[in-house]
Amino acid sequence: MSTLRETFEDLAASLRQPPDEILLEVGAGGELLVAHLRVGVASLLLLLPLLNRWAGGTLHETLAGLVGALLALGLSALWLRLARRPRRVAGLATVTAASDVTMVTLVLALLSLESPVAAINSAVVWGCYPLAIFATALRHDVRVTLFAGALAMVQSGLLWAAVVALAEGPLVSAAYGTVSTSTQVQRLVLLLAVTLVTAMVVFRAQRLTQFSATDGLTGLPNRNYLNTRVPQLVRDARANGHTVSLALVDLDNFRHINAELGHLAGDRALRHAVKVLRKELAREEPMIRVGGEEFVLVLRLPIGAAWERLEVLRRKLEAAPFLPEAGVEPRRMTLSAGLASCPQDANDLSGLMKRADQRLQVAKQAGRNRVVARDEG
Image 1 (cartoon, rainbow, N blue to C red):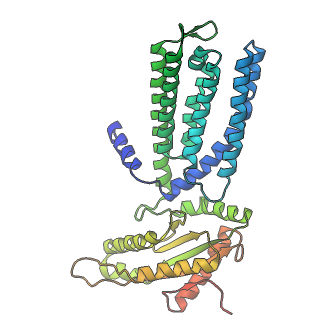
Image 2 (cartoon, rainbow, N blue to C red):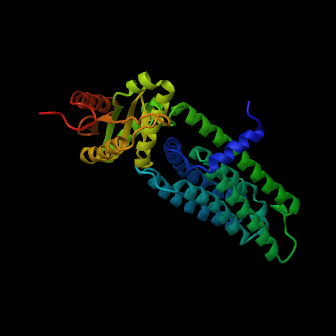
């Protein structure tokens, strides 16, 4: 079992690397879930100022709560609209997490206009800081969690310092008690603890996601990813009237490398081919290993543009021979591919795979090292 130190070292190493395609896709789904939850929570928050007024709270407290809840509801609707877009919005998770934290600070600042003590000791509003940090767990990105936690600590600390600096008398309230340094330090420590615990939960979830959906040899998404994520990509394309193309790619005569050079050399050759192809692919163009030397590429392009894309990949691989070891003649590597598009060829993953496989067989029968995108005749 890994020690706590090893876990933190792994966490630090993961922070230095950009999230891979699998985690970005899962995080995008989590962002959409958070966006839906945020709308529901913001709607519920509208009840809090009304309940506060019914329980004897001041008019100012009620108005501050209503302004904050209405603003939160408006922003929630905006974030939901952006999260629903078929293409990921870069940095959306970070922006929305910052918005959630800052909204809490804004409501506390509005409370301070009538009662400075309320801005510091309001347990109900301050308790939304941990909620905002916990919600980042659904984004599957440790960076977002650490950012939200740090921002909450900074804003909470600055608000506390500002209230103390501007206070004209003792910070005491019959409704909210006395502001004490020890209590505020404890709250900052609590925010730190919440951030670290949430970050570890996210990190563990990332590892489990990667292990379950990643091929161990190449680091590519595996068939589990194909069966769970690609159908959603196809459905999103259909719902938004977009075209998505699927390519089934096979490395030509790859078994000869295994037979002549051995399986260890074959593994290196496979990683070489994957490295060459991935270098040309964008982050939103997942390459999935579905068999020994078979891969699926998902391209958000019409079939003509997708064919051109595959032709570039085919030429790049052909121009980058595999060197088994020093002194051994380099081995030329090529690929054959069949393409299918949604909605022209099929409307689901199964249909696209079937049509792409038919065209892949045509490419092989025609001599290999080619891309087929249309049926003959």
